[in-house]
Length: 260
Ligand SMILES: Nc1ncnc2c1ncn2[C@@H]1O[C@H](COP(=O)(O)OP(=O)(O)OP(=O)(O)O)[C@@H](O)[C@H]1O
Image (cartoon, protein in one colour):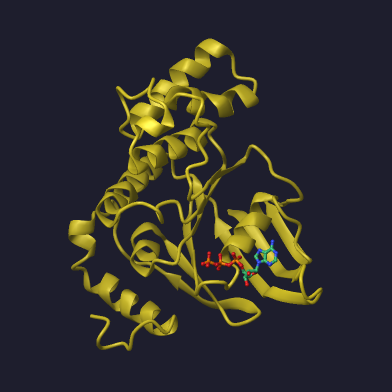
């Protein structure tokens, strides 16, 4: 079953200084199957965040359509949970308060909110940190809390915009594995924006490559790696290395041979 259909998406921005219109996203068409994990990759400025923002309902596309389960997307909705790069936690709320907040918005009773928030924090490895405020948590822990807050609301689809970009390389690998471990339990549909080739491959069932100006879908690549995945296994897997090579060449990062 198709969970998300993006058809002929075009996005034009008006430059407030020059007054001229720039077409950032030209004509982007792709779909995401139910329970599928799809990475969206492409060079900086190609419109990845724009596409995600349209799917989230934060902005209206200049042209084209976005449908979720056959219904047009025109505004944000609880069935789409968004995880941002900068954690987006409320500094005045504890970890538990932050996770419970989304549930409060959904009208979940207080007692249930507490139980579910605690359960989610345990799931992301934050047990024992429930009453800490964001400034008392490390970057990796804050991002775990951010993921827990979205997971707690049980969205049909998770939209993730470079969620680990501001986290150190080592913690990032741990979090990538953690998010996959959690995802494997319920297989929520995921659209995952990243500029990191390794991350795009490691996480996804399929990779959509955006490119060109204005951007279009340049490639749609199936990631044929077994799950569950760990970095220890994946980093030496020839399928991973070949795919990494192909993507680095496509993105113009390295020439194919040296990329290995
Ligand atoms: N609100 C806006 N107003 C004007 N131009 C915008 C706006 N948002 C994005 N753009 C422009 O649209 C283009 C695509 O931006 P977008 O952030 O979607 O790309 P991206 O692929 O996510 O980039 P990055 O990888 O650097 O985060 C860029 O040229 C950007 O300057």
